[in-house]
Length: 457
Image (tube, rainbow, N blue to C red; front, side):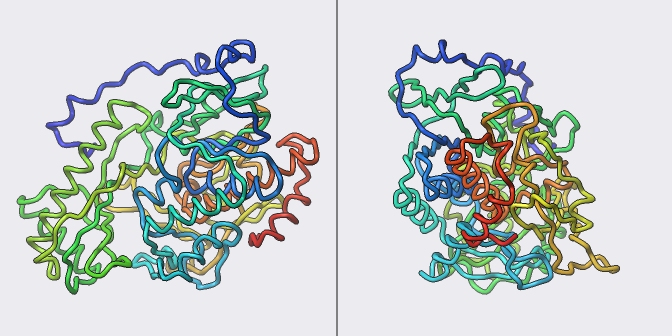
């Protein structure tokens, strides 16, 4: 665990509230006033949730998008400034289209973004200004006819047996119910799926969970050193004993703002982010690490002599918590062997990028060459990875999809989360118009619809 010993006393492991307490019958939910009746409800306004809501509404479903914070965009707007996954490692052939690329292209066209190569070979990224990303999502959500709901957190799920019937959300005016026969869980933490009783995998139970990262921005940066030299300086500074640097790699890259560099170097390991005490300690630890790395950059790295801390991320970026055990579980072999599927709703060429490796990161490429280098290959993501095996009326989208720890370390890239959201939203709208279940929709019809939307299959 990379938590500073002075913070260790903050972490205890409280008993988990039984998920059954978060399930209400329709009769029990009727004590709450109805806020809205929707054909599709999306929980979580991050990349996957925004894409899901826009796709669902564009295809004619009355859709509500529920977000606990005060803006849409999620981790992409609060923690990061680069979206990876549009291009596979080792190739400039784009493999992700649809709503995700529509947003990225709008940022590029308005000069609020640039294409940027990745030192590690993870594929070309789209580096953007987070404030511009928030605006692009606001515009699309409103224009598509989505009913946006900010500052609202899911409190309970309304169930009829094993079928979802709605949600109870907690707002500043108290709890309300939202009636809907279809929910897309884009919460990242599989909150709806957990409350509804879906089969889930808890990475922390196997002590294999990717660490959290607090990103930060530095201003006043001149001409910085190249990444290999930065890493050498990190190792040298750590060995000196003058600095506490839990991660001896990472990136500091230019932004769209002159003299401002976005820094992704902190590492908060051994944390179950669903534990409220651990998550709290992680936020404090992340800011503490950001301050220490800022001192290191200023003191030891050429080009940073006049640098200063502009801001830390809105929250610590979380890579992995609960994952669905769906109708299909994506595996490491699926990723590394570039497997394709008849029900694929998107492609991924991102490497397995496992930060659960101490001070370094484990990298394994899709269909790597004999020397281990990337080849530009990609694999398919089955629709079944979004479908719970034991609950009706629910899809998941985003990083809580059904995948093993290793496969998830590839499939969690933001461009892919955008693809999952687009597919889930289109599937929910198709189920609405055809009168079929989310599990029983016609995959060929869905894939045709996605292709017409510009999705690359």
